[in-house]
Image 1 (cartoon, rainbow, N blue to C red):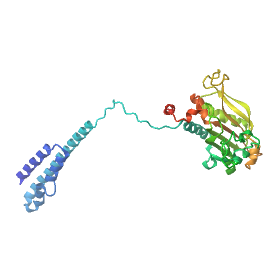
Image 2 (cartoon, rainbow, N blue to C red):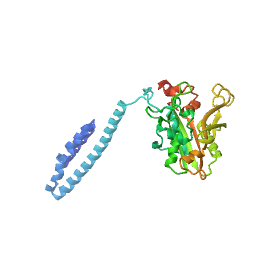
Image 3 (cartoon, rainbow, N blue to C red):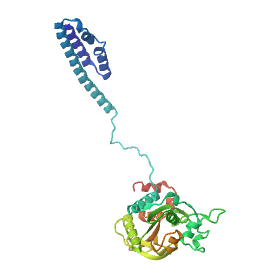
Length: 347
């Protein structure tokens, strides 16, 4: 029996050594190490031997099993490593080869500008006005009356505002200021919101004007708000948006819904104030309008003007984008020319 076990060990270890694949090694294991194998039958029949032989043969059988298990594990590791290396060699990728360019979409420059401006004001504590308070189809009452526009104001004329057919009261909003009214009607002070959105005006389309464009307006209503708060807020925005300290100036202006009102200029980005074609030789570029919320507007929305005050501002998104990226034709934003839009992929 002892000689038979030694012969079995020699035979099985030889087959293990000859196996060249994991599958072949699995086959050797299934034949010689399974429950029906000859080696296992010897272990099962140990009970028929004498106590002396049982001890000797049992010990030898266990040792052979253990030695064969070690040989199998070592061979498995060698074969798996070899197969893995062959697979890696077959699937090798030459990273020095140029890749295939796959075009992919990016945000439109107008969307990017809206996101950038929004993030700046959110960092100052402003929140975005709710969507239900910012409809593009608006009533004349909200768009004009509540904002202190007199009945004879030229902005109400059909050559300036789009009126819906068969209605003298429903219009396409000409400004996002109506959102401020709806926010003040639905919320109590303090209010600190910005309202980005699309607006519509009867304009002849040219390099400088379009009949649809985008605005971002801001509103802050609280106790003890002064004009200096407005100036400080806008100067901080301009510094972040255009990068670094940039001179600004405020000029007297008039808007029906703010008093006092101003227009805000920034030093020309192109010539740094020296005077050029872009700024018409003045060294300044107008970027937005602003002012303190008119007392009549506060009364219209039921806010106590003795307790609360506030400021509002508004800017054209297209204009802000044109100034920042030196674009000279507003029509480029709406033509969907991929050659133009592709320039903003990396920005």
